[in-house]
Structure formats: C-alpha cells, structure tokens
Image (cartoon, rainbow over all chains, first blue to last red; front, side, top):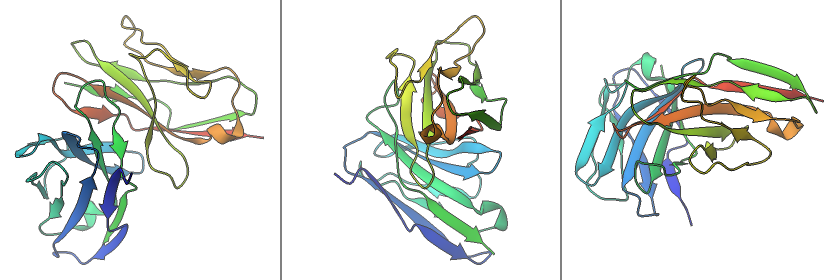
Length: 113
Length: 108
C-alpha cells in the first residue's frame, strides 16, 4: 500500500523555470491538498480539491496552479519559479474533508536559486 | 475565518516531566480539531482528533469551547516524544488549516 507518493523528493530550480510537483494516492480519497512548510510559518495551504474536476484556493495560492483530472493525481505547477517559493511541499489526501485523517506524502524539498 | 494559534515555537522539558502544548483556535461554528506530529525525517501523521476522545501514546487533548482551546497534554514525557507538533482545524469551508507548530524537545 503506497499511500501518498510525491515526486521528486528534491529539486533545484533557477528563477523563472517551471516545473510540476507530482502527487498520487492509491486510497481512492476524494480530498487532496498541497501545503508548503516554512520555518516559523508552519504548514500553509496552497490549493485543495474535493474531487476530480474541482479545485479551490487555499491561503497562499499565488504562483501555483493545480488540476484534478483523476481521483488519484493532484499535480502542483510552478509556472515561473521565484526564490520565495523555496520551501518543503507536502501533498495530503483524505477520504473526505470532514473528521477524517489526512495522509501526507514524504515531501518535496524545492530550492529556487 | 479559521485560525489556529500555537503560542510556543519551542518547548523543552525533561524526561518524566508533564508536558502541555497549547493550541487556541478561532472559528464561529463547531470545529473539528486535530493534532498532527512530525518526527525527525518522517512524514506528518495524525496523533489524535477531538471527536474520538482517545489517548494516543499517552497524549490526550480536550476541546474547551469556552476558551476555544485544544491543548495537548502528556503526564510523563519520553525522549521519543521529541518532534514537531501541529494543531489543525477543519471547519465548514472544507479547508484543513494548521497552526505554526511547536517543536518539543524532551531532554534525558
């Protein structure tokens, strides 16, 4: 049982480059979300999805795009990376959004130079 | 708006001492509250949720609606409890919002 899988684990980008962080879950969860973790800031919600075809913005959505074409996958796109996007990114999923445990991926450490 | 406040960034205790990690929240409705833990080099995982009213690894947390608090407590801290702890709230907006976290260090 793989759970929530994120790729890559580490990435270095140059300012202005684009990339996609991948997130996949095999638990048939409806709810998926992306967070960034920064020292002293905790976990901040970037985007989330309550099901295939439905996405919404979290606290810090600027500079990021998401799509949810399947239940399993929820990629996060950085269109033009900036040094302020240097962070650790976590993907999470849960059966539904209410009262259910969120399962997290192992994280992607992104550095933008 | 949903908001979670963890006033202590760092908390250090000695092994065997009681520990309390504070969490206060702001939400106008009935909240769903959680504590998540992140051990060194491991992924974030659920520790406990208020609705289940259970004790996990000796930790308990009681929802106090009057004080809008959900503090995490353990009577006797162990070295393996050293980790980053996050309080989280899920309200009717479907968003799971986290506090800034408290890093707990249990010294031998």
